[in-house]
Image (cartoon, rainbow over all chains, first blue to last red; front, side, top):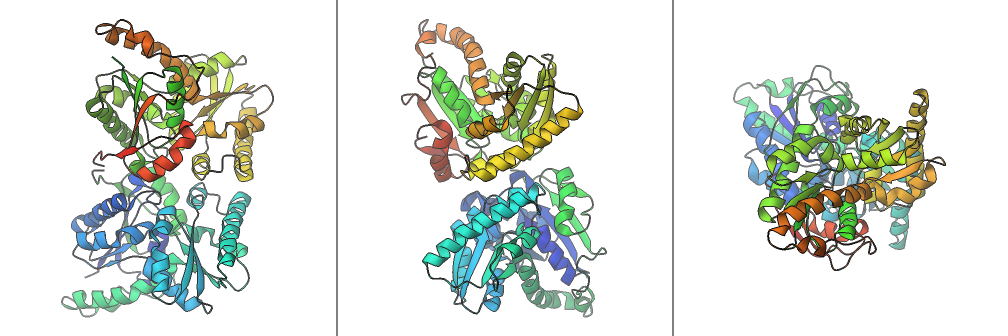
Length: 289
Length: 289
């Protein structure tokens, strides 16, 4: 049996994680929920985000039969991983730990920078995950980057200028702490769309870590093991059947069902930028909020 | 008896309307609700915005005893005025009609430009209200302006550049239609904080219409009449007692109670920028969403 993997976010940003996941698991079935009626999570409190995330998780497990969940949202991963794990009886993976692990692999100096939304930074979830891996991390909130991506200005000079301002402020702060950073973590699922501009703005020798890629890469192993256990009872071969390599970055054949709590039209129009292929028909659902 | 005026918005922006209202009605009691857990409304659908706005209105009337309501949010005024009027048994005033009336007064050519959020523009509420007054209006969504205000970049060169880009696009579109605009309506309650930059970016002879000021100005008359009716039964003098002039732009003595559905700390910190004085203690409430 093909396992259903539930992926959720406050909006479309998490489609960058789904894109990276589907490239690695092209034969899995994916149910993606964007809680667009209540986006953005980035400026909201832990209590509110935990409630919203738990509702999204319950929809995917109860209504869509998801056997695994990926929180494709840094803010929700930072503030609501525990709440989601309490709310559903399936394995749940966030994106913070994989991002920190990728930073650990990339850094030789042990000093890394993290850019993210206000709520993610305020939670210091990346700093804690980095510290647990022997890294020193300095985090900075960049509230204008998500709106710039959603305006479609992913290659715009204004966006380049805003990135330069944010990174200059971050580097100045890092310098006062004597940091020798050699990695920058993109701690928001919108930021991969800005990667070309960000690559141009970082100093030579600083590696850019894409949280979506890191999460998908890290997700394959636990998912493989989990799927192997649950699938072998019905079909020993299924485990390898729905797994795939990364040769096709956006498999057109992967079964993806998208749900949103608002703005289905906008989701369908903008979502393809993040997914790298048309998202298809998006179904409107009501989480009661 | 001092009447209670309920004012609501998706966030803090509506505090610019409250500021303008309190300058005119310094002795009224104001209850302000910012539905911050679900902001921004600007990118959401009519159905969702109508539901949210009705819940806010019901809280102010049922829990706070508001006898009049002002929807201090262009998006909710554009998309949810009818829904709010259906949801509560008190008079409700939006900000679109006053904005259009002020444009009518300001314009001699009959051609006006309107900048607003995506949802307000998509509703074409300003175009309809202007057309009803014999004006031709061209509307443009400026999604980056609210985030720039909330980042505190109200006088920043990047913000000036973004305003220039948006206005150039709008003027180019107006030129293709042979328009001779002489007024620009700020159709979002965040935009008054950008007024100095916007004044510098408009062409000579184009008047800038502040929707917050226009709404407060227009609100005084109906409120006076309504209050006169409801108040005279208890105190014939009350009508004049709680009214005031505009000599004091932000009366420190005006009784203002603020409520938010999230981020009380952020509301208290940022709200003063919009209100022009400290907002005081903000009470957290739950609208169930």
